[in-house]
Image (cartoon, rainbow, N blue to C red; front, side, top):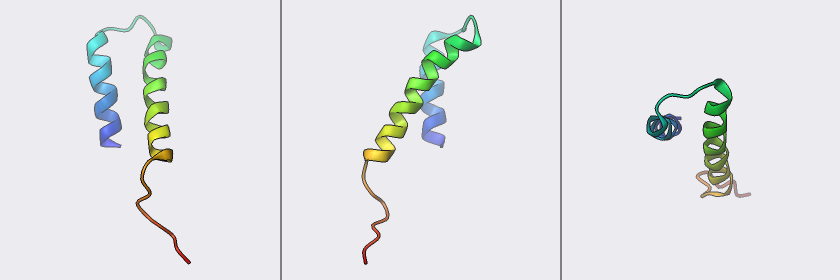
Length: 50
């Protein structure tokens, strides 16, 4: 969660001010999608073996 917040903050700082809510969403949503895809396809921390 902290990593996600830090990444969003880093990317939004570059832009500065946003003219409306939609422009913020256009920047933040792809970041969150990328992080989610990395999480899904990344290393498994818990391996459930039978």
